[in-house]
Length: 303
Image 1 (tube, rainbow, N blue to C red):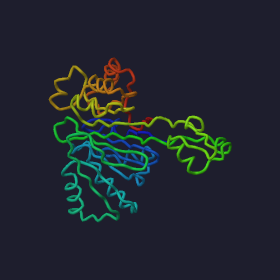
Image 2 (tube, one colour):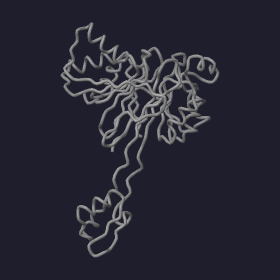
Image 3 (spheres, one colour):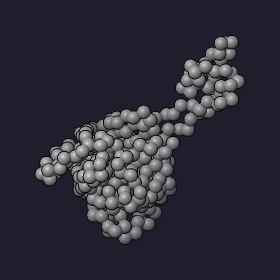
Image 4 (cartoon, rainbow, N blue to C red):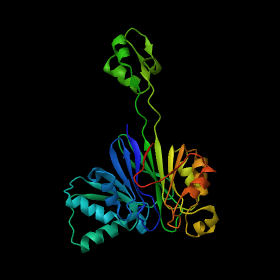
């Protein structure tokens, strides 16, 4: 089952020819979710072959321009290309007003329905549930209201062995019980345990997106146990005071979050344009948490 993240933009503040503004596409079981939508995101999606009409949900972390200024252009293009499928947008207070004013004063009438869910959280909360995955939002520590997002796969059913069905002449009810992890009793009184006639499903996977944030112990709690964590790393430790003043993180601080949260992999992004190369940032993080990867525009990470 597909669970992958495509980096559409990995830079901070101003876009460059190498790095676009923050945006990521989360594909879970072929359901597409867009997280943040910086300037030029729709161009990045075209460049990397993303069929953006398939996007059902958009999650905006906060109202700094490098995280949302591409949203109106994307919504307009969806309309111009004939979208009729509903679009659901999750974001901070005032985002709905910004969208509505843009539509009003440009006299744009979208050919599809869009729904807005306002986020103003003080703790981690479930904000979306589908048949196969859930999305949680949690507060980050930034200069303005900002949220992170955690995508969690629901546990899958066990895989029953075909030969067992024939051998024991299992009924539909017995098959369903085994798939759900429960034993079943055959008509002759024999009890079948799930491990006897089925295979355990692979562990459920999870991914956390930590947008702009200062280092925070609360964030560690919110993402604890997550398999793969994306965390901003705007600065290096020699600019730790600058990071603190602007409510951003250093590479070492991002690595500390991943280490203490028990992650398998850390993805670093949101690099300041002052760094022509991010090798030193990656080295700084790797000294704290070795399993670190660089967010590069167009990169795809399997979760």
